[in-house]
Image (cartoon, rainbow, N blue to C red; front, side, top):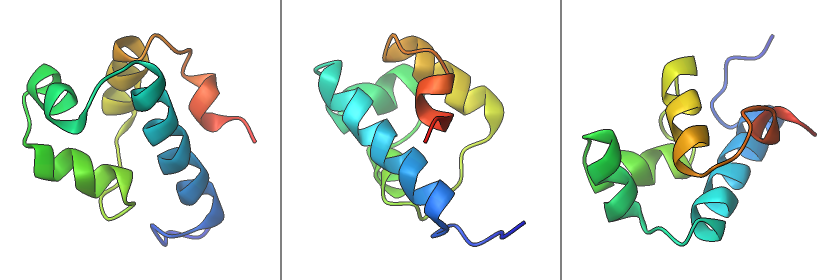
Length: 74
């Protein structure tokens, strides 16, 4: 398994994270406030510079009103 944060799987997940955020009508600052993190961290997650852990992905799925499989499906 590749561990590169720029792997095709990681790229697909971050693309879907950005898409879901926009579909939810939220900007990065709003997401950051909800998560209790900085907007800079949200930006790094969405650009693939930082990987999410499972709990963060679940929290974002709830925030964006998406099932977690939305982010994992091809």
